[in-house]
Image (cartoon, rainbow, N blue to C red; front, side, top):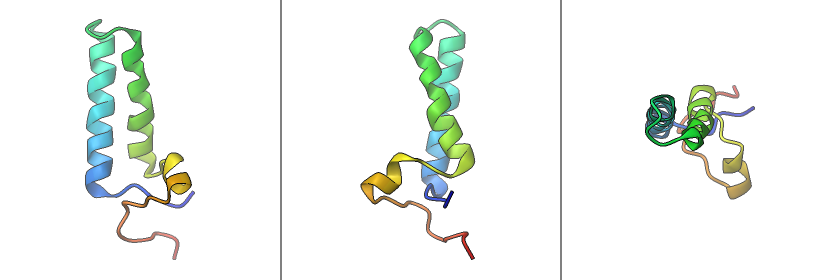
Length: 65
């Protein structure tokens, strides 16, 4: 997998994922909050499977070399 999630994008995904999961765990927003696992994992792995389909890459430096 080629990294396609960069700095700010990564931080926003991780924070949003943690917030959604925490709200779901507290019962504030219900079970749908566990969808926060998706942005959390895409932020941690630096890869979003939807980005290549849309031609998006927020990672400034390629780590392929």
